[in-house]
Image 1 (cartoon, one colour):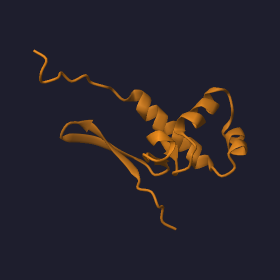
Image 2: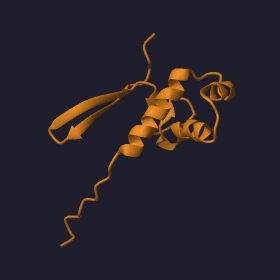
Image 3: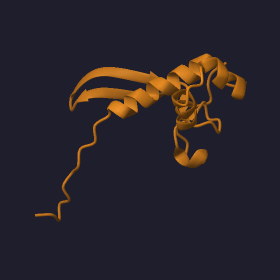
Image 4: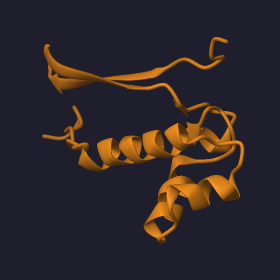
Length: 99
């Protein structure tokens, strides 16, 4: 059965020289779901919720008990996505009106 959500594909690299593509087929960012925050497969379970539970010491098995409609692959991909975001670098751009 095909997913009803588009895969989140990220191209990593410097400008015109991509070095890698990362696919997150279980992470969705939809404006009408949880305020557009990254969620698991369009459900109202955010990546932050899953990462927070793991950070609090819960195992993947315990998270799956709390959310029986999730799969282990969902939790792993949430952790991969969070790790990618944590390593992301933000660059401040100057405004064209700033001298």
